[in-house]
Length: 97
View 1: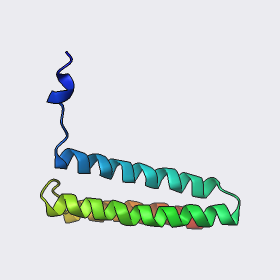
View 2: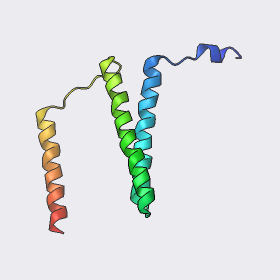
View 3: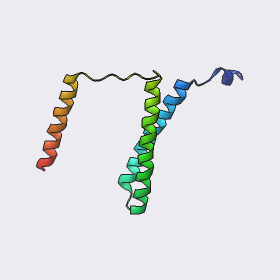
């Protein structure tokens, strides 16, 4: 049982995937803080952190895709059209209120 730590290692893909999850979580936390904050100074600081986190998240995502650790495929056009129609419908409902 004492040897279990020697058998557990994170490879590059696992480490970078964990980092991507962390960046996405940070973005959510900063977004919540930004929408809950009332002080302009606080909101400005949080927005700066959020902006940098979004840049970092995209860099980590790009690294994963460039090294074939993550594959991204485009959604079928029909799926894109369906989502766009749903968005437009909700947008129209919100505009009517």
